[in-house]
Length: 314
View 1 (cartoon, rainbow, N blue to C red):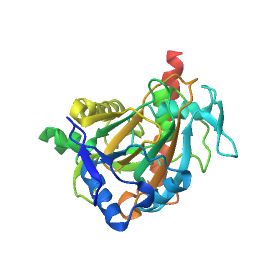
View 2 (view 1 turned 90 degrees about the vertical axis):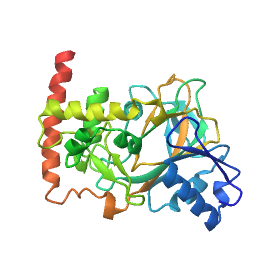
View 3 (view 1 turned 45 degrees about the horizontal axis):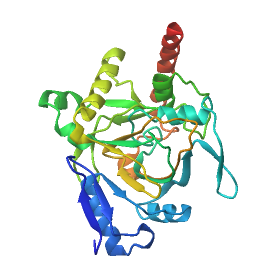
View 4 (view 1 turned 30 degrees about the vertical axis):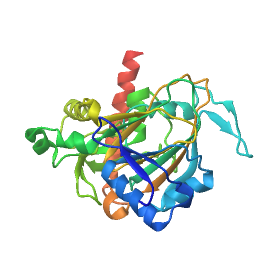
């Protein structure tokens, strides 16, 4: 990778810090080296990049078509001039969604085509908290006993943000086409084969529910246990303490991640760029496909049960 220095994260089975490189001026050889390290380590930390919005987008596009580029993940209102002002209220839908993302997940499994990879860059960070955690689902799968691997090999689960918001936060946003609360649920295997490396990993997280063929309580217990097994060993979990200017790139096809709590009246602004997956390997189905009807039915039934459960606890 020319003069770039790739340093594996100490005492972890994944992740590396990349220094002596500028993401806004990579030649093809340098980018090829970064992509190789990305596939090997699962995530890369690039300190002191201070990327502009355009540079975020340009770097992301080197990995493929973007879902979105340079989108603020923030608790502040962004002004037309690019500055940030008023703190968003904790009871707003934006903040309820942000808080939901403090549970382990992988991005865009709730869309027809799930994400390839994502990057965050730090603009403003709170004095304490607000870190980003990552967990290695490759190593998590490899650590499972053979009986568990055999049990889950042919199982799938539906994925939906409306489910995860209701389950994790008690938040039931209205269904609205074109938003992440669109009323669809997409069926995805619990075991994923990485399309570029061929390595198997678990493919679970907060958006997953309703394993066909299992009773509801058995499905919930299994999905919870799989996530807990991944994050149970510290060597499979990394916590990134943000410094302004950092860039963090991770593979959504093999890692879980989550935000960490902070004092929500303090500003926290991260810029997110997300790369869409290849439809050949990341497509579940489209809402117009016949398979989609089962997902809608499963989601509606699950939301009804969750609403009753939340009401009984109120």
